[in-house]
Length: 235
Image (cartoon, rainbow, N blue to C red; front, side, top):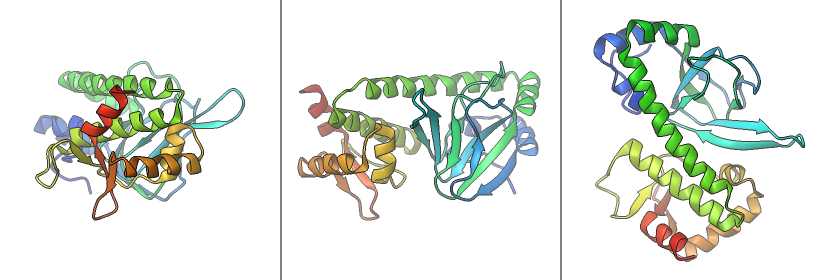
């Protein structure tokens, strides 16, 4: 049962006026999916938009040589896909659950109709798209890094900034440090970096020795943003 109040973790839903949220929740569907469940495949027609309540979603594309490449891993608070809302078209990537995931979903047509009835939703979506463009710009910087170590550092810095933006400043965090709000495995990080897990594990071990990252009490990764930024800028 979808709550009477917008989920705190979703900036787009949280900013909806009460009347708009009331209409949205009537149209949206809540579902829990097992690991390795494909939501849609690259090239299929866009029909549904999703909001991640819990879990992680892998977005991947197939390259010209037939190799599958992970372009993003979505988590709590993320909306996807980011294309095809107004114009329709096809899904630009394949979406698959990595672990059990709880999602809110709404059909493209219902969302478009809702925009027509509530034009303020279009402004909220534009703001959300602006945030996604900033993230994509960071992804471009990551991908052009030929050195794997710097690619990993850029990815971790982006993930830290995204976690801080979603959660805000926590009292239990030191200045210049951010604890990831999800458990990032070496395999998932390797997929994002387009590298072998063993290579990424060696790089992470080196970064721990340098004091760039650490492990939190619950096993979450703590990223020392200030030190990481210094390391990137001085190289």
